[in-house]
Length: 226
Image 1 (cartoon, rainbow, N blue to C red):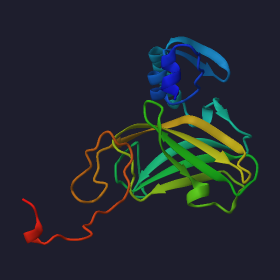
Image 2: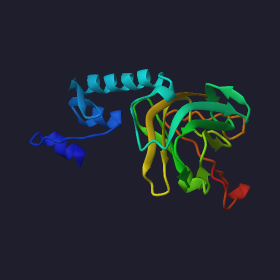
Image 3: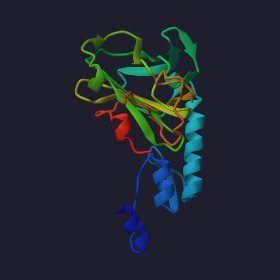
């Protein structure tokens, strides 16, 4: 439908998105905004590339010093660390590794039954994976001190590439406490996700899922067609 509207040439459509692939496909002109202020106007390809470059730059800023965050502020994320096999701190993980992502935070006010969300975006701004503690492993306690929350992957599912992490904390009423987009960058290298000795080579895919194959009704040798 969006394609029909844009190809008709008779309407102006305002599309707001963090998905740069969509913007580049559907739009000829782009406007980059930062907290309500116009930063750049121009060709969609140029504007989207400038936006992605700005994300790379801001991700290099120490998380505790980031000002481009939203929320009520009872807790604030201060650092993100990656651990492999529960112990080895690293900046690069492999597909299929046992990975723990540690989100350190400082506490300012008690928060009961918080939830945490981490999203992984590719370099086009497309969200390829979201992890939500409320859905997978609800946290029933309260936060009353600075500390860290950990998101664990028995086998890390993302294919090789560079990813930007966005992180959010919410209270029990789903009110936003702290949100930082592009909080960190994670490099993923090739790995044997399925433990078969045959690492996946489906480069168009971004996420792998555990699965198994089997033949439901084995065919007798004499019935097979050569």
